[in-house]
Length: 394
Image (cartoon, rainbow, N blue to C red; front, side, top):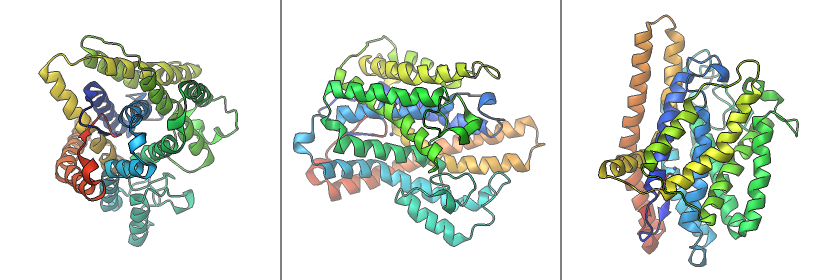
């Protein structure tokens, strides 16, 4: 979720801001999810689609940052830049998850109490190296790629996208990229409408007619993760290469309002016509999110306050996303152990976790991420380190 861009290139600050808005909604979505009876009943119902927003933004800004730099940049240099940008906060998020692992012992995490400390340390090592945990190595009970910090699953797929872009896709012509995006749209439709062309989706019956998934190494989760990645990321790249923009006065606020509405509206068609929710998911990913990027990239800042808001949201978006989930595990445990606590107490705990997440993310950015990345760039990129931050985590 920030991109290394030549200092001479302007920032897409509205895209920064939109990524921050999506990250805030993700945290709120996970807090409400603690009290949800399932996807149909989730309060901020489509908050999970924020990941697809991140992917389309990433595709756009990766193209913006790197498409014109390949004559002077090697594939290895690209990978070094991506690792320096993304990996320090991945490590921090995993360390936080490990430190608070045993504080999340709750009925919905059946393996926590049975896990010896040395397995937590081993899992931390794997997580810091971005090696996904196979189902048999699970230490929590949810079969996540990273049971210490579940949110890193989307970073795993982001790394996959970066590898594909650097090794193959960057060479695609526009027509060939159009074909790739069109083919990728099939996977989005197959998952959203539960068509299940390849007979892989039966295991996720709890989330039919949604795009929920991608966080594990089981066949269904791998298929969903790959399907969720391909269209948004490469559509974002295509949007950049086509060069089409829409200039809308007050673009950030209009885009933020539309984004928030899409991510929080109730589940349509529940409970008897859930295909309508599949249609909602598909329209959002195939059309609405690319439109937001086109408007966000084409619109201009109108005042200093909006600029400041977008810059702050953009700066905190990736730290917030990658460090918030260990606190959600703790909240889940607290809620499970205090089901009869007054509503006001539950609200207070949730708001506290939200504010703690933001405070930790801000501290992580200023005290850890920026200094570490600055040192790594000076150490491993040398004179090429003199770049400025761009939009999001790319």
